[in-house]
Length: 169
Image (tube, rainbow, N blue to C red; front, top):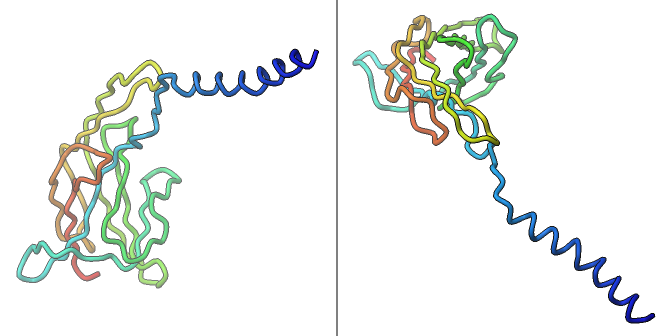
């Protein structure tokens, strides 16, 4: 009887441990490892001499998506780079940059990015993902001097997509 109790206790302890080891080795997809591809915007300064490669900062910034209630960046300070998403459901995305919201002097710029959305099949577990590529950029020039498209494809590795040259920040 004592042996039977020892065997049952051993099975009760060893059984779940063996089951856990076997199930942890199963090939499970982790669809969230890469994250959502974004457009990386880097802030540069514009001087009277012309465009520079000197990185700059925006002292105070909020970014919203036009015609939505989405706030993409909320009252961030000392901004040097921004990762912004493109819309999956349309071929253009509109971002509104709000500067100096703590003061009564509110200035805004609007950036319109026209892009192609190409769905591609990842796996049975993860389904489809979207490849996005910018084709044209329009913008207002209240604080923005110019925007240069460096890399048209969204990414998750921090590759610079847009060089945004600002004046008078």
